[in-house]
Each structure stands twice: as C-alpha cells, then as structure tokens.
Image 1 (tube, helix red, strand yellow):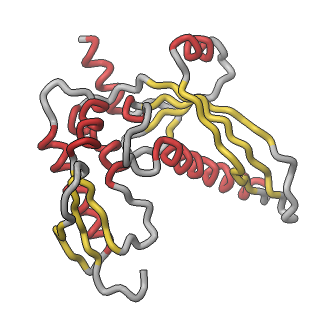
Image 2 (cartoon, one colour):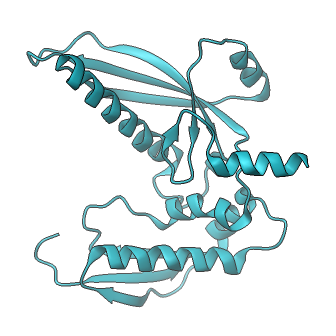
Length: 221
C-alpha cells in the first residue's frame, strides 16, 4: 500500500487484554512472515499431546493470541483463518472427516461480452474438522474460506475457457451445506458427483493432500 513506510505487527490476547507491538517491518511480506510464525508459536505452546486439530483450534480461539498487521496492504490475512490452517501441522491430524455440498451459481461471459443465462452446478468438498461449526472471532468463517478457494477454481476454469474459445466464467453466488452421515453416504452412491479435497494451504484439489494419505496409511498400521 503506497503512502506507508512501515508495517506494524500487533498481538492481543483473544481472552481480552492490551494490544502490543511485536514487530515493525518495511516490507509487507516480512510482516506477514512474522505474523505467521507468531501464530504457529502460539499453537505449539497450547498444544497438548493427543489433541486433534479441531481441539487445538478451538482452544486457540478461546485462549490464543490474535496477530494483526497494520496497514493490511489489501491482503486477506486473518490470524484465525491462519490458525485454522496451521492446527493440522502442529497436531499431525490431517484427517478429512467432513463432507460439504457446495452449490455454485455462475454465468458464462461470451467473447462478445454478453452473458449466458445463469446456471447452478454442484461439487462436494472433503474438509478437515476445523471447518465445522463456528466460534467467536473466527475470521471470515467457513463460507469465506470456501468462497476464496472456489473463486480460484473459477479463475482456472476461465483461463482454460479463454484459451479454448475466448469466454470466461463468473461466479455469482455460492451456498454450502455440511452433510450429515446419512446424506454423505447417499452422496457417495452417485458416481457422477464431483469431489474436491481441501489441501494443506486451503486450496481445493482433485485428490486428497499427500499429508492426509500419509496420515490415513499410518493410522491403519
């Protein structure tokens, strides 16, 4: 962000307390690295042997420390979202026990600039347990995490469509629903369903993340 000569990294206990300056940097990426390391250190201090990623994340939401950057440079950083993604690395819990149904409404933008009629398509998302429910001050929440990753999928789809025929896709709306066990079993019977998996960095992939496969193999041995 132009006009600023430095970026402040600030900490504040989530349970309440004064805000403290823990670093000041001339380059935003350096401030971001400091913030990420601070969140990781916080999670490691709170971690207790045997905790699941969800248990650690919930404990952090209650007793952890929010780390903020001022100014934010327009980058979608939030310590709660970061803690959600880092909790599996600390606990080594890479399981993907949740299944979401995600309905996307979009339109195809023609080379002429005209828009095709809106349509809806559905995909299913395997996600870690930290995506379940909501807690106070959880950042932009599960919807925000799913929306950002879905927007990246649309960017990829648009690049391929643009190269092929000069058109692109625009996401108009997104709705998601966490499936219960019965709904998940029913969904698994439809071989036409499209599935994605939350990866270690929060993006979506067509196959489970390598860490999840390793975790699954070790749990069976």
